[in-house]
Image 1 (cartoon, one colour):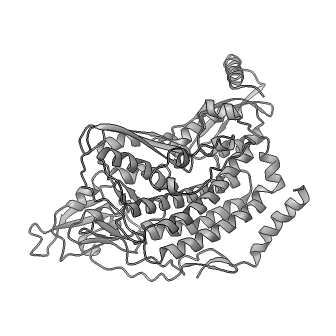
Image 2 (spheres, rainbow over the protein chains, first blue to last red):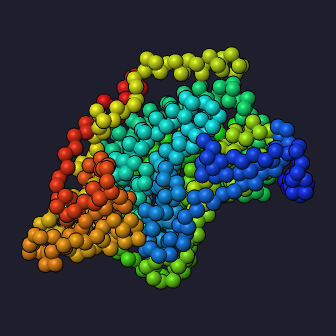
Image 3 (spheres, rainbow over the protein chains, first blue to last red):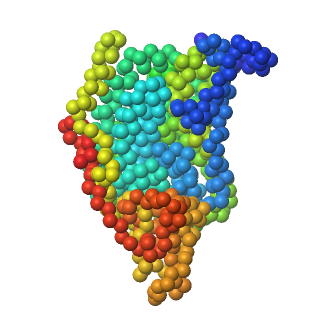
Length: 386
Length: 165
């Protein structure tokens, strides 16, 4: 196994060589995306020597919309609907991090029932995001059943989110001060039934996809990211956990009610594409377990929201709060100068950090392994561009 | 697990679904049943009431023309503009009421949270498509109409899997 420095040196040497020998017929330049069915709004150019990738140049930025700058012209409540746009499937987690930061600046605590409800919404949101990601991973590997099953089962969770918040994907549910509304009548039974059924479906995913010999042959032993390299490259979320590091923000820095919840951080030590594809499924099982506990431990009655003024002024200062999203640690750094609008908002997202591992993993692998490696990184192009 | 059992198990879990119930919602014939009559907000308690966030409903006898909904929408979608109406109401001296452009609205419902007079709610009506852009602009009189929505299908979980019924 070559170390990170050696591989980086090798890549630098190769890239120097390639720029010198641009007329060489031996190398072929191939552009993947942005119109490739699996790449998302993202393009990367690869140079091929025969069947092997020798050089990768990721080119993000196709869907950059400057939402960090947009935050400076809106107050904290008006920021919520546009902040959740990058990953609408995981909207509750994004607004969760921003709400935690604003609550810290304003200096309020959310009522206990509100904390449970927004943790519940975030877990449902995480499940629905992970299913969407899994559907694309399935179709990227050419397994069309694995596209249709998660996309269909996602409806179970979208239905719950719609009952809870009123919208299917762009929920705008977690706001500074708590949640928008209390859970509706009969929600607990409905949620329990659908989440339990969904957990049974995960076993069928194992049978048709993860234990399928064809999928195993395409993903096992492909794109090895060792523990040391993963830590040095700074990857996060499921990619980090697949490399054998049991890191989860919910466990390391518990926010809200997560220190009362009993759950394990799921990780694998095989470090390959299969592990990166399977750790999200283990996470989904944990999420189902967490949802059952949240419903069980939730106080029967009480406030769900600390009422704040629409134009709430925060004291001058800065804060950084992070949560565990579907793609890893997601943090918001909010600087306030005492006016209702934030002075600066900076997002630290999991997608961009996982993108850094892409050139490292692809260099030296075969072209046929590219889909299995690329989408296993749990990378969401829109979130990386912001 | 060896290769043969792996393939057999994969085929088995797929073919099993021939006899299971279909999960798909046959949309125009069947429609989902929602919680309540749409998202509402109680300004006294400061908490919303769970419901679907579809098109708005405006109660002309309660609207005072205070523009708080339009101010809340500034910087989000800028979908709300205040327009002059012909009606005369005691509480609405300026005779202005919100007009909503559904080509711009993102259905976040923060305008409902902003209304202190119980005048603006949201309804279950989400089928707003039209042939022209101008038809997407709903005037105060169009917003006053209570929509008809008769969805009655829910997700049910039986012994033969989940289905819409």
